[in-house]
Image (tube, rainbow, N blue to C red):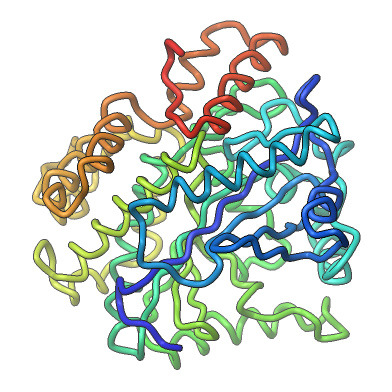
Length: 408
């Protein structure tokens, strides 16, 4: 079934499974799914939410079971599933842990691939790319799927998403620490994402998708080069170009949607869903052409947008936008911070939001990205004990579906 712009949404959330004792990753998603289902399958339908495995054996995904129009209570639905997973995991001395990267994991020694359904695909990925790096095995994200019907809607949606992608990590960065050390990037997940498929650069491109605004252009400009590049590696022809395309937003013509992939997972579904809500309202604003015309949106080259994105993954909301033309899209002057840019967007869309969502967005804008809050909580003490104590608090925020504040 085909849906029109902003008619429905699909949200996907990924979480780590860790030991409740020492917070080390636990590659037992197969045990969790078996415990829930009675036997092992890669997908388990749990009413309006579906559970599934990922590439590595310690990451589980939960997603809306089909498109939904209800974003008001969606966080509560996800939170109920988080709590159910945690109840089942107790038997294995394990629990879910939020954020986009485990702060102490050493992927070279701790990564285990999923060994069941689709394992042939994952093994091929591992053979081509060597998935033992952080960019493959220590990354958890939220994906937002937004529908379109036909080329005219695709053109508008793709143009708007490309403009917004560079500043999304300013809201969502949650991966500041790898292997017990400050990475220098508030969104280290997106830093490693840029290069984890360097063997076949056609797959990720410049993260920001190219200026392609119809199905035909997209197939010719993105899918065909990917298919040609993968041929020597995929002799059995088992990989699909829809999945191989790893840009920060990917067109899924097979289901009439664009999937945004640059969003780090947060400390709780309440935070994830409200970030999705603000992104969706910002996209509606751009699609309406109230701020800037469609032609002007389409005129932005991916290299110029990537230059902004590349700075935002370092400093998140504190990044200064020096590009006058980009600041001008939102009627702001160069020198504005990403936080101020999002504050401007929030003012413009505030009336469209519920009281619940307004309160959550105001918390985020006031307190900063989760990475900023994590770094403040850790302070100067990067001992394993201190990091674990902070991430235990994040685990409690996940279980209780509440924001992480420095004083809690």
